[in-house]
Structures are given as C-alpha cells and as structure tokens.
Length: 530
Image (cartoon, rainbow, N blue to C red):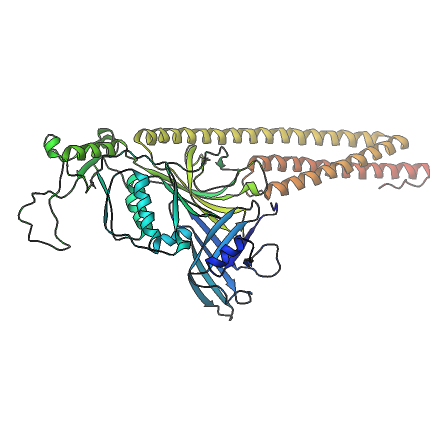
C-alpha cells in the first residue's frame, strides 16, 4: 500500500491486452503516475454514480508518449488508487476530441464509460415473461444480451436480494438497449441497486435491495465541508392518485383506428371505489393541497387489483427527495480514523444553518485525480414519508435555534475573553508603573543590575511565547475551515504578549538610564547589557 496516495492511469490496447496483463503476460501502458517524471495527464475526473454507468474524462498533451496510441471503443482505461490499491474505474474509450489552443499547443480529450456500457451494445426483443420473481426476469435479460455479443462483453448474474412479492402476472421487455431495459423494467419497477463486480473470472452483476454501509463519520461543517447546498424537490408528489390499467377489451368504435395519435379507453377503479376514479391521501392534501396525477399499470386488467396497487403506491409514496451537493475533503488520506467516501455508503451530514442532522446516502462521487484530497459528493435519501418530512422540518427549526444559541454563547465567550484581556492589560500596565517608580527610587547599583537581568530574562521568554502564538495563528488560518473562536483567543493572547514585550523593553531602557546616572555620580563606567 502506498501511503503517499494519488492515482495511476493505465491503458490497454484492447480486452486481450488487459487479460494478458492480469495474467502477468504483458504490461499496461502508463498514462499517468504522480511519482513519475515522465508521462502526465493534463486533467482527469472520475464520476461514480449509483445505478448509472460510471465515467472518466481525461486529457493528454501532445508531448505524451502515448498521444497517438489510444484507440477509440476497443481501448480500455483503468484508474487505480495508489493509497489503498483499489480500482476506481475500468472502462472503454467512448469519445475523443483533438484541440489546439491559440498559442499552438495540441492536446486530446477523452471520455470513457465503465464496462456496464457493454449493455448498450445489444437490443432486447419484445418478450412476455411469466412473473417468477426478480432473479429469473433479470437473468433472462442478461442471457439474451450474452448470446448476442462477444465473449468478453458477457455478464453473469450473482446475488439478487430485491423483494420478489408482486401481484403482476407478467413482465415485459421491448426494443430497448439491454441497459435501458434493466433500468426501465427492473430498477424503476422493482427498485434496488445494480452493482458490477469485475474479477479474474468475469463480470458479475448483483441486484441488491440495499447497498453500502452506515459510516458514523459525519460530513460536518467546520470539519470536512468546504461548500454545500441542499435541495428538497417534491417533483413526484401525488396527493390524489388516479390508477390507470390495461386497455379495455370492449373498447367500442375504435377498432378501425390505428396510429401513434390514437388513444384507447383503459381500466380504472370506479367500479370498485364507489364511482370515484381516484384515491386520496387526506394528510398529504392537508399539508400540500390537491395534486392529482395518474400512474400506469398497463399489465393489470382487474379493477380490484388496480385499486390495491394504487393504494399500496400511495401508502408507500416517498414525497420528497432531499439531496446535497458537497465539496469536501478526503480525510482518510491523512488520518486513519476516517473512512474513505464510497458511493452507496450512508453518513450523517451536519450543517446546522441549512438543515438538521440527516443520515443520507452518497449517490454520486466525483474524483479529481490531479487533486485527490478534494472530492465532490452528491448525497441524497431514497425518499421521505410525510411523517419524516414533518419531523425533519421540526428538527431543522430546533437545529437553527441551537445554532443561534451557539452563536450567542460564542459572543458571550468572546466578550468575556475581551474583558479578561482588558483586565490583564491593565494589570500589566500597573505593574510597569510600579516597577518604574521603584527604579526611579533605587540607589543601589547591585539591585538595579539584578532587576535588569530579571527583565531581560522575562523579555526573552515573552518573545518565545509570541513566536509560538504567531505559529499557532498561522496553523489555524491554514486549516481551510473557520476557526473563529480559537483565532479570536489567539489574537487576544498575541495582543497581551506584544504589550508585555513593549513594557519589558521600556523598563530595561529605564534601568539602563538609571544605571548610567549612578555611574556618573560614582565616577565609574556603565555596565554593558544585552
């Protein structure tokens, strides 16, 4: 493990070259290594997103050794984290752009997609599958992909933990790419997460109900948050739901009409819902008013089942999605007490002026390989019930009150520190005044010399104290997060120290002056002092 960190970018001419390197039969082409003086990228950013194809964008200069070697589509790029040895990206070159600046400098930019992108290389057929559960459905989709593509683009289904309970008798696929089919007909309808795992034996897909782990390491204002924004978007909110089922078998007068603009009457729930075509959530209506929308279940032709599905949808509705955009610091690079940010993991996020403490999942992570310690995160919940929404609104108000109380307390502490400083300065000035009076009255040369040495020692010690305080101030200013209270305290101590130094210097001058006067009176030479 390399404790220095950074990212190495490796290039493979094709999948066979990659496979040979995995078997130690060949070596990759190194596009970038932070410790090398040779090949370097101009830029490089990885974007890792839940249930999406990950991407890597990078640029190389004309002087790069492999400037002309990178192959479109067949070439593979791997990014390895040198801190922990973890692979952050593996994918193919999807797009390349050549550019020349006004000063005549040439470069190339590339966009890569991870190997889930292979699922865009095949198109599914129209198929009607008996609903035998999520595993059989997804396995059928992947099998169809595998028989229509090359061997190195094939996937294997491994773990499936999503819920299988459903009253839908059949599931369908149409003429979409395999990836879009999985998103539309599997993820959007049954939920869960698609996770890709690549090892020496192949590419494995897991379809999981939950991903990641809870990490009790807060993303917190004053610790690791540099900038943040929070959005609450209730775009999918429905307070009055109209369930719509399959086309009615007895639609009349429309048999002869065909075409893309033709609509047909469909199954609704009036016959089993007292003549009313909608279902209503009274609590949501009271909170947000009437927001009426329809939801399609094209495979359901029984009104009773349709009503049941509609009620289930309304009861389980997630009315709002809270998302954060956070620029933060990867503290695990310098402190082993912190864990690395990973897509799918859940963290407490604590930014009192904006919201109460929320436990939210990292849904997107952007890594700048040229600046490893700074990462951008998108953090959001899968959704909130009305009760959770109301609870968070109450907690946000309490959090704001706590923040106001903390600020008031900080002001009181600052005022108390200022008063204490003023008293300390008055004490120092009174001590100086008293010592000056003693010097003026003192006629003993030995006593003055003793006082001179004492004050010179105190002056040296106070100068060391001031140097330490100045170093601490510089450290606090360099932390990157506000340290207002500590800075105020250090500044007050610096003020006291500077006053003491000024007083000691003045007093030493007074003692030397008094010694000179005594020397002249006694006819002897003054004693040399520092």
